[in-house]
Structure formats: C-alpha cells, structure tokens
Image (cartoon, rainbow, N blue to C red; front, top):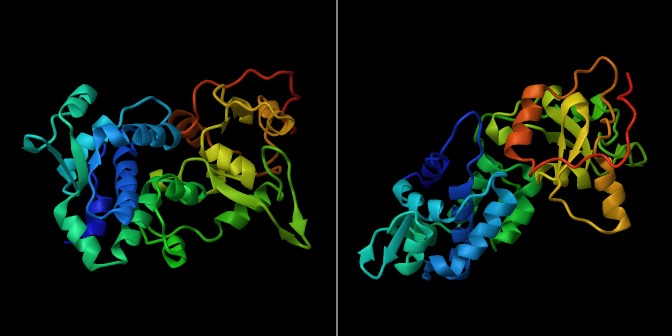
Length: 303
C-alpha cells in the first residue's frame, strides 16, 4: 500500500480554494504521539484541547471543532476510533464523543508500516506539511505537535504539485528592491541580503503561482506574521493588521500595530502589485478577524 499517495488524497471539504487542514493537523498530532508511544491511544477528552489549539492557530479563520476530523478521518483508512462498545465513532457530536469515551489512533496497517519502515513517519509528515502549510510554519508546527524530524527529513521536499520556480525569490526581492514591503527593512552582510524572504500571498500548496503578482518581499518577522494571519494586504495595497493581535510592548506597537493602513513599500515602478485575487484569497483563508483602524492617517501610496 502506498501510504504517501493515500495521505496526499485525504478527502477534504473544498470550495473556491478554501483551506480545510483539519485532518492533516490531526494526523500530524497523531504522528507526534506515535513517536512518543507507538501503542497508546488518544482519548478524545484528553486531546480535545490540544486539537482545538492547533485548529485555532493553524486552521482557517472561522471557528471549527476537532470533533469533525476525529470522526471523519476514519473514512480515509488511516485512522480508527473505538468506544467501550467496540470499533466505530459515535459521530461528530462533541458530547457524543466525550460520553462514549471515544479513543482514536492511527489505523493498524499504518502503525505496522511505521514500525517496519522507520523513514516512513518523516516522509508522511513532510508530505502533510508541504501539501497544506507554507514552509515558514513547518518548524513551529512540528514543535506544536511534538513531532521530531531528522534534519535530512526536515529538508526533504517531495514533489507534490510540480516543481517550484527557483527564480521566484530573486524575482520578488528584485521587484521590491530588497526591502520588506511592510517595514522597509533592507539588511545586508556585504552584498548579501539577510533576513529577507519571498512570501507567497496565496499559498503555493493551494494553487498560488510562483509569480511576482503573488509575491511579497518580507523580513523574517513580517513573513511569519503574514502567514499566521496577523497581517494582510487590503484595497489600495495597504497593510491590514488583525484586531485579534495583542501586543503591549513598544516593539509590538511599532512593528505591528502601527503598520495598520500604511501603503506597501514597493514594488518598483513598472512591476505589477499583488493581484486582487491573491489578496482576496489570503483575506478569506489566512487573515484573522477584522482589520484594525489606522491610528493616524497615512500618506497615499507613492507613484
């Protein structure tokens, strides 16, 4: 059985590029627990809070429940649920899962394959990460689910949607003249830029093209905040800051809160800005909540 192919074909609710990472997050969590205890089960009541936290932090902006993946992942053949009455999930109701003492774990055949092939766990984890999350979140996601990958595994990137364009980073950084589009940071060591990255607006895993109109040059801090939904890009190429972001330090106010309503830095004249379709996707699928009102008016975007 090709487990990587099965993992790549998880049945998910999809419509117009909507993110639905519920099953991948549960699987990553289960793989982390398998590393810790290969024979242990995952009672719903014991893991519900952890799964809800993962969905809140790495899932879509709208609120959802871990009961859905806990029940529905069974249909993909990689997960099983048992209660005191025997095999089978009692349904997607949170109260039903709690009352029945529902316990889930990886399917028996998958557990056996993971024991036979030590490298399989890392391959599955990497496939899930590449298919459903941007690279900027991979490391912290592994930490969040307690998943330890070998350095070689962490650097692997199996082909999941064709090859990425290796020119993307250079094209985007050049378009923005090697400055962060949010804060203007332009640090270098000699002639080499440091701390600057090419961010996909519409994530590559969700059909985002390797094109300048889908890219932003961002410093490492603002790239992470952009991919976590703290920051976005609105009409008029102005910066959005989520109302849900809380930061009381001078640094948080200066580097995040004060950005609300500011025009992007760049791109240089003659280069197309971020396409509206990609901005809209990010606003619907990644950005959290409503944008903050600017504290003071900002000047119009330079021509």
